[in-house]
Amino acid sequence: MGVKIERFVRLVSALPECESRDSDQYTTFRVRGRPFGYLWPRTATVGLKQTLLEQTALVAERPEVFEVQFTAGGFGWVVVHLDGIDLDELSELTLEAWYLTAPEELTAAPPTPASLVRA
Image (cartoon, rainbow, N blue to C red; front, side):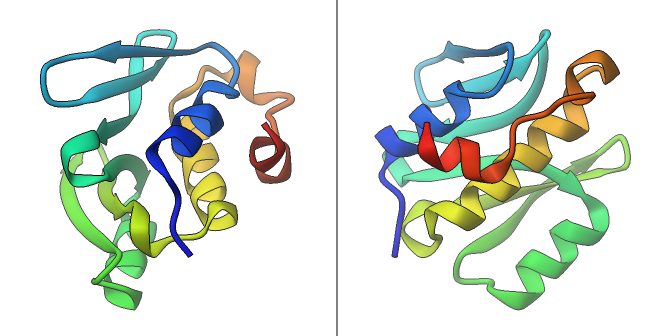
């Protein structure tokens, strides 16, 4: 189990209109200028936008893999430790983060988790 950083970057880059912006400590992933994910290479973690309910459930179920990052605007962001998650689950959570952020015209025909795994 576990997902390498390069594999996560390939997965997230397969999302429609995904843009990345690097800073000194992390990379931000955006769709049409709105952030839906972060990558911290130094800690091999990612932050993903989720619903508040999903944030609570993930952290309660596996606190060794997920932790609360912050809440904002009715959403709960989670930190995901890449060494504790498999690619299928990470692709589902990443797609959900994108879906919660993308404008409606992009979500009419979103990619599937399986298509991201194949990316």
